[in-house]
Length: 132
Image (cartoon, helix red, strand yellow):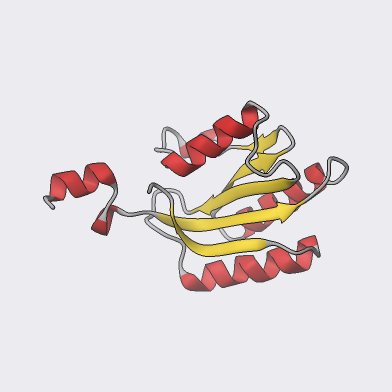
């Protein structure tokens, strides 16, 4: 596959990887859990995009016009319309702005911090392709 096509399709050296999470919540504790998740992201110099129950978080203006990967764009659209794939969960992605992936050490640290802070069962994928 030619370089130009790989770039357009986000393949090969142009792939971008992040961390995906699914955390069960209820309407009473969603804002508290989202705040904890955002704090963990900020402490690790990454951003969290996602939400649930109609609540969601997006990158701040300091990130300018960054391209939002397909999976994230689709998720936010579903949350905004109230059609979450799993309505009783926070679903989202951690990404490293302007970089291709989150290093393994940071990914493990984020996982540990989430388990400690949220004190709940969570599904986590430490390396997910954000575009395909």
